[in-house]
Amino acid sequence: MSGGELALHGTVWLALTAWATAEVVEGTSRERKPVPDWRWFWTLGALALAAHIALAMQLRHGWSHAAVLADTARQTEAKFGLNWGGGVWFNYAMVALWLMDAAWAWAAPARREAARGWPWLVRGYFFFMWFNGAVMFPTGPVRWFGLVACLVVVGTWWRQRRRSRGLT
Image (cartoon, rainbow, N blue to C red; front, top):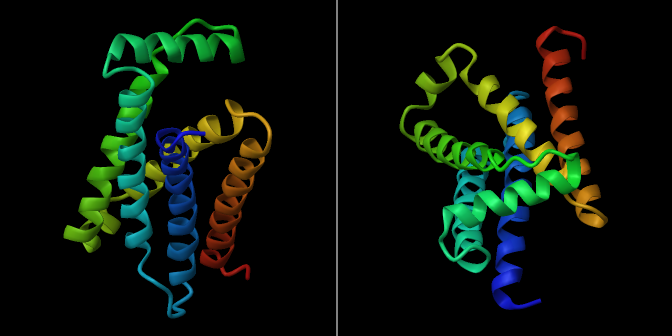
């Protein structure tokens, strides 16, 4: 595997790991334990995903959006029998949303948390995206890593919900 390919794969797995770590750290911080600030992991994940998209555009698609759409359509058809490249727009939206949310988390954390439902809307979208990108599309050990990361996040959310209802 070339250095570029290693960077391409490494950045997306760094983003996935940072996402899951941010969720666990943020969930743990609600227990009032001394933990690192989840925003560092959140920001690292956003930057890693942006780097992944830039590397994919450079290394795989020659900065051609048409090539990205065609490749996405090919992969979607191979996996689900649907020749559709529109999923790439969901990826673009995810990285834009993540970068914006990371900036908001640093600039006005109290206002971000006070925005009714916003953090959970972002969490749901990201879970959907990570589950598809890290569990549904890959094969082999990569799929298992993605599944474990998603299960860890769901477990963290479940613990938060039980704790908030006084069930723990």
